[in-house]
Length: 392
Image (cartoon, rainbow, N blue to C red; front, side, top):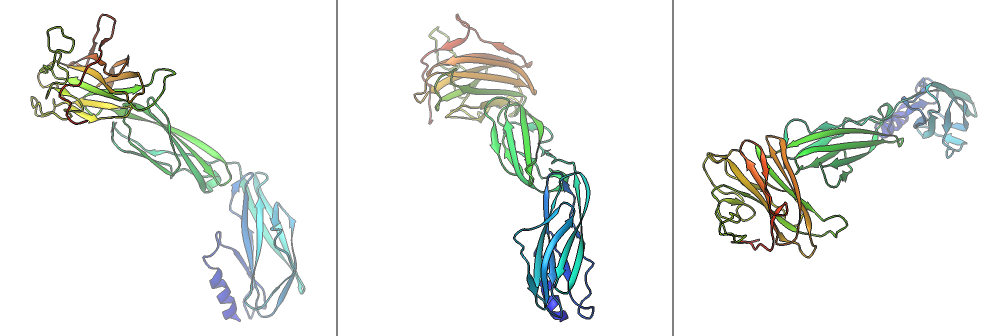
């Protein structure tokens, strides 16, 4: 007889979550009756928790006539319908649910009525006024543009320690659309300098939510950082377009684009950093003064980024934007931001048509910026063709 009961217990072990309360029926010579108490873990007010009372027959048949709750906010699953007969070693499961209607401790009683008598099983539960907690970790320290960032929501908790069923991240750059992802961990590569807002909403299994927020400050790639982005004018159509960022070393000569008798420097190789001259070796300061195209974007909306660490004995660099190809989508508003040692020193915008070349201004090596100007304000040349185009 003990073998039959032991086999039934072994079958149940580790199979149910939470572990069931086991009650054995029969004389002491078979196996003593367990002091069964069905205790529910604390849960939030308004929640529901289910457990099973498992009855194992021992020594002779037991016929269960009825199972009913006589007190407390508990209920037996309506699908459990006596009468039931338990043979030797047979298992009978009684599903019980605790309804946490009010805060505090609840007591109840389940009465099992057998043909040979009845047995009262105590029930206990607790309800708390609590809520889930959203916690964001990661994204700390000095982060530069294009460095991978990982933020983690695993330290978030459901109400009263219950499990979570959902995570919703919103990653919002300094400007531009918000990216949404749904997982405990979110990874992204910030490509714009400035504050990136991170928002995490968690949902627990009771449907309750909590939200936390964090801001990740993203810095420049190097001491001098020039960033180009672009977008359609207001109410204009979207679509792909290709604008190119240019940063000129003072030694740049190039062509006479405006036909005023003086070379303008644009598209000079190797002294114009752009898509066709992404990593020149100027070598005047051991490589720190070499301009570098850190990001090229052929479809939009950017960013394109040129950076350098040191001026290498010169005192200025000119900045320009060429509208290479609109792919039939029309004009674009170009925006150039210039940073020096994490500080924003210039933020300029201009509406350009395909073929336009906009001279934005000049970076001075003391960390300031001078805007270029023409007869109508912005200095823009129209219908500029690419010189020495290379492969695009």
